[in-house]
Amino acid sequence: MTLPAVNWAISTEKVPYEAAVAFMEDRAAAIARGEAEELVWLLEHDPLYTAGTSSKPEDLLTPDRFPVYETGRGGEYTYHGPGQRVAYVMLDLTRRDKDVRKFIQNLEHWLIGTAAAFGIEAGPREGRVGVWVDRGQGREDKIAAIGVRLRRWVSFHGIAFNVAPDLTHFGGITPCGISNPLYGVTSLDDLGLKTTMEDFDTALHLSFVDIFGAARRVEAPDLSPYEDVA
Image (cartoon, rainbow, N blue to C red; front, side, top):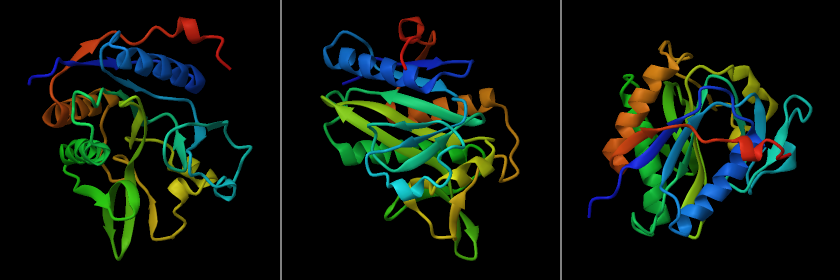
């Protein structure tokens, strides 16, 4: 069965985190009710830390550095900020096999394909969420994170790919609870690959289509109903 094209939206201004989450929750609920179409929403946030459902207080190393938000996604602490492409993924798994493991693997393949478009060999690692790059001599750095939640078989939250963020901002947390000094974070910029966010989004879109099917550009969400979310 051919699925309808997924809506693909890009916000060009920084999006407040709490408003984004409120919108996602409403949109996911509407998708589950059959009242809205699937959506992938690309955006950036101002610097912040988020705590997933498995986060440990001791992994927040500098709690006063940036705002910290408790969130319902899986995983531990992560960072969002300028230069990092966040993609919130609101897909209906009742249309795409009700298989959570396959869904996570497809998200990984999406990120791996995007990295490959820039000549980067990246992949998952046993026991470590996200997509990683081998830096040699036993060192591996994460280039993209995955943290999703499902409600009534509709996903929300999503992925974050490091294009050119300030990597020192990750120093305020133990990213994803991994403290081994051989495991760090990297970005396209850190790997010597300069690209615009627009060009990155093109690669992200092409890889998405390869994995999930067609996606068509729509206007970014109207967040005016969520301006007072605090």
